[in-house]
Image 1 (tube, rainbow, N blue to C red):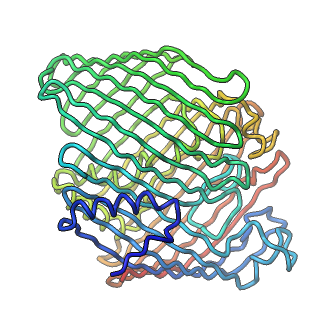
Image 2 (spheres, helix red, strand yellow):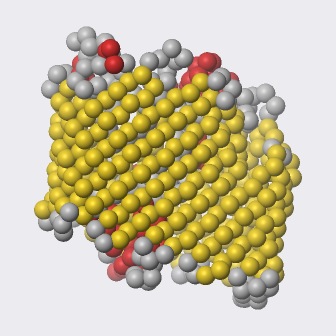
Length: 530
């Protein structure tokens, strides 16, 4: 095999560089699996532009998607990466028609070519001392919370753009006997891809230092955490944040502990006010009545108001449950760098933990189960729309997975409130002054249900329903989307064929007077792995 690195796109260079560094350090331990893939789809839709019903027109779309999956799982190196190139051909030349259907105009609502990739790496460069994490991704993201949501219709560009992100993070770990353990981490990351619409590309430099008590402290535990992050984003100025946190825990019994936190936060950014800062504290508890159940809750106060958090998990032989609530300052770019909180693999991992205690074997079982049952990679979540502002986000999420015999089901729900705390000026080029006001305070609610029935060892029937609603609480504006899908999947060795029927309707959401859209689509797909 010949490996060429000179022309790697910059967004993937950190992941490739980290992998090559680890290969050089551990050449004999590499255990790579490289799988070429090819996906062929025929898609008929009666509203290719996702526009008002009066302007809708149909088309037959041919999609060809060659791809590559790369994985490695050894004691010192874990890599999971995939990439696809999507090419589209339109029977009725929708890519050459304007939104009103006139031929000869470039259609901004559909793609001719689209690229996507996702990868993550964790490696150990020096045993028990020096480690490295790296990630890279590119995919479609919603521009606004108001408008058609991103689904698996990669040909569409309505209310979406391609966002690229990468991060590379070397860190040192040291144990001070049984007294304490410490970690010093540096992270360099980048998020961009929307410069042409006003979403600035930003680079981040973050230093994080942590110190936590060791086994010598059995009843009382303690920890210190310091984070210093600088963001640079040329067009709208730089920003920074510093967070200092100290925490204590007191074990009342083997199942119940009391928790306490205190710290100080400082945020600096361009615009009116120039930043926010203040002390914070919280009190709470952690309860683990069994190995299958955990509940942790806190309540306290930050400079932006009263806050709280909740995390609860429970699993049985057939089900896995998750519930979480958070209240924190965040940004769109920060959310793009975070993994999905309620991803399908994570729920399945907890369900298979008892039957497959080895994490490497369990990961392979989970991957095979998801493929066999045509399960989505992640569950419904709040829409991470584009914004250049700092915002306070309150997020409540719940999910459940059920598996028994021939049936499996997933349910998820979310409610989020995003309230911008930095100046609206930085979002004016992105959303315009009117849409910018819509995004000052946004509430999103959503629900997703997915049921799969195994007809036989090779065939599955899937039914799914997805509901999303967005509300501007400052402008009294609401927006919705509903998706119903039914599909049939059959496996033929390393090939998988499926047919999928979808009905979608919702608001266009690009202005107050925008109408509604409805789409019916039929997709036939053949996926092959070599």
